Image (tube, rainbow, N blue to C red; front, side, top):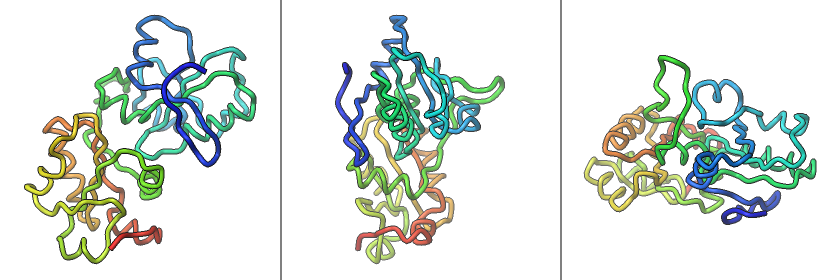
Length: 229
């Protein structure tokens, strides 16, 4: 297979392509299937230009042109639907498929075209990431900056692995200094809602791949996920 680097998974090894590469294929008129592997409800809210929706759970039963080049994506930020779809294509013996590096989060952060229903904004300001998806990003050593907005003494008691203490606006600014607009940044709080508000402020400053942890640290504890101290 041609294309970019390789994503190594416990379940297999799949080639990946960058959003810029896929956009270039579109501009050149290359023939390929651009597949959004998320549930249809999420696809209908917004999706990458040129994408069709085949949810990961149905990929194994959906016929595809045998020789078609396929690019799969999900929401990025730790989402697993694209890998699930890739496993289904692998099991079917499909000859050429790729994962979109960074998923829809990276596509949108690089200001590539998004399709949304008429009258609605294609770009939600700040979206959430589930605790399990954030842990998947951490375990796969993906590039992500995680900011803990709780008080410093609470942070020292326990925090999400790899998280940086950023309890003040000044410490948030220091933490994101040097980050590019497309770098993934995840903020979390104690469930107060501060993470979404601070994330929106970062979006207004030009950081385009900002997420907040859904449910904050309370959700992390409820799911009994590992912490650092």
